[in-house]
Image 1 (cartoon, helix red, strand yellow):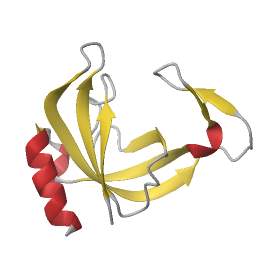
Image 2 (cartoon, one colour):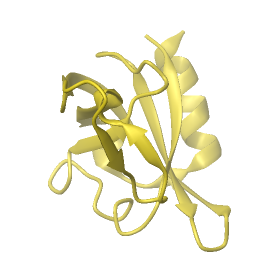
Image 3 (cartoon, rainbow, N blue to C red):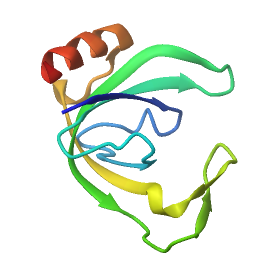
Image 4 (cartoon, rainbow, N blue to C red):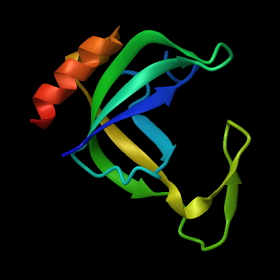
Length: 114
């Protein structure tokens, strides 16, 4: 089990939670696996800084979205990336998906991983 901190911008950050959005689609260049802990940290994209808020979740399943070689997908940041690394992650939220301070999320995640 590993811990990964991922930048999450609005409106996607505000939609995270067990009764809201419990699926995350990401370019998996970090080799995220089932059982890993994600710190989904609120990133203010236009201001290029952290808001200080985060949501903590565990990956309960991992599903490759596209397996067609050499297919490319534009992502929200305007970069073009190979489709074979895009995956969907099912999430189980800790603390009922409540937003917490980013520093608290790191402490909590370290306890879960160790």
